[in-house]
Length: 337
Image 1 (cartoon, rainbow, N blue to C red):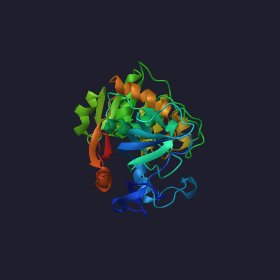
Image 2 (cartoon, rainbow, N blue to C red):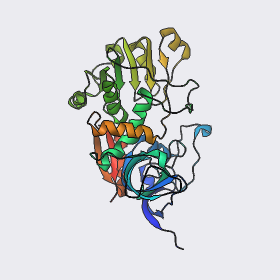
Image 3 (spheres, rainbow, N blue to C red):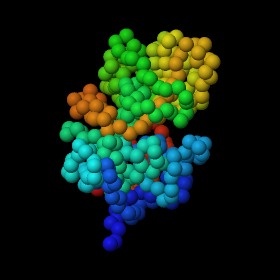
Image 4 (cartoon, helix red, strand yellow):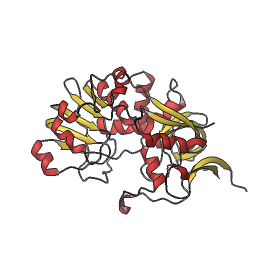
């Protein structure tokens, strides 16, 4: 019996956006406990271009297994086409969204017309949220949630031995979000406000009106001021930029406070202890249960998702080129006909 096919983006060799090929690929079948979802929209995330490039800066022992050709992508919104044996809570025709197959594989396989993944990776899509916005929220929303609200799993981070435990936020707390206009940052800002915290947003000045509209209490334009020199005695810094310079925010945190680098930063444990600042991170993992919570906040308007730009699936190369230019306001989304 001939294998059914679909259109997908595949990578046959690691490299830049030019290695993303729009072509015919085998259509997946749902295994036990899985759903087969007809994809309507795909959220674009940094792991997508890490996978495309073969994760050259990650030690071999930390790389998840992968084989070429691979189909990148983790964030989807679509309609259940088939339900695998033992999969519970969903039926054919249900509208769902999820972050699938992460972080177990470099190939989440979402850049395609169909994707198969564990039913536990999905949640029912809120009726008042379209597929593009639902796909846009998955990884970024789960990242913000697991850093700020509840980790929801016991898996250790591959980058640190200490377990991440989100600090309690509420009225009287001050949270600084660096990279506040980006995918994770603009959602984290809103979750911190939902918890009752005062939020300082760090971004370029062109995003001020956008961030004020999301509830930011104060804006620091990093093109004009050094945020670590302007902000003082904050309870928590969520650094959505991270990298080797993340430790500069230690001086902005009060003793007893915390600094969470979303992307791996470079810190000295002795300096952290001397300053009395807790520095921890976690690796985001798929969770349909947490997405259901996020979905309720989307449905009632507590949480809003910004879309920077949309591209057709076949134009994934152009989407990755847009991502490489940086300065995103929200998320990039691929639409699937």
